[in-house]
Length: 231
Image (cartoon, rainbow, N blue to C red; front, side):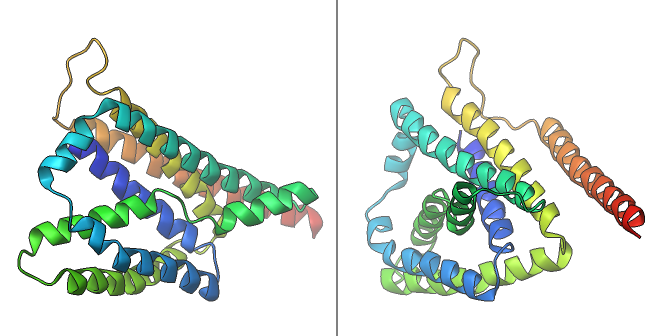
């Protein structure tokens, strides 16, 4: 269960970075400032947690079901943004769709905040004896620096916004699938396992990457055809 949750957290961070890359510098700064302030102030709550309490939370199936609802809503919003973005490329958004596109575009994702909280909790556990405020605000500074740099790197590696939106779509589909796995783990007739099928994980990752690459090639080919018809 812990490994599945960790993979979901990594994917949430990747989705957050790709979403940041869809904004301009001012938007990136504003969203990262909110994330950094949350990280700094979350240290008081993080310092009251224990590994036993966290293990109990992960074993609490009713709590995991509640979290799955939040995860589903978050994934729905991110996928809605991708669909609206794809539709906006044709310039045919209605008034309500434009409002929804604006709202979903500025929504960073609810799951990124539990991920940041988990980061602070892990730092508190790893640095015993260090002042909690120092840990929290140092983590906040790291968040304020890392995510803008990561967003800039995503823009550099993926200069086409359409490709970034496609990757957000695929990553959130994977988050939804892993959320189902985390929810039903230990509740089905099959025996649960904590082992990771690295071969299967590598296969899924390769499938996603190859699909994104093929989509990029097809998109460029279709664009060239449209341009050749206009010229």
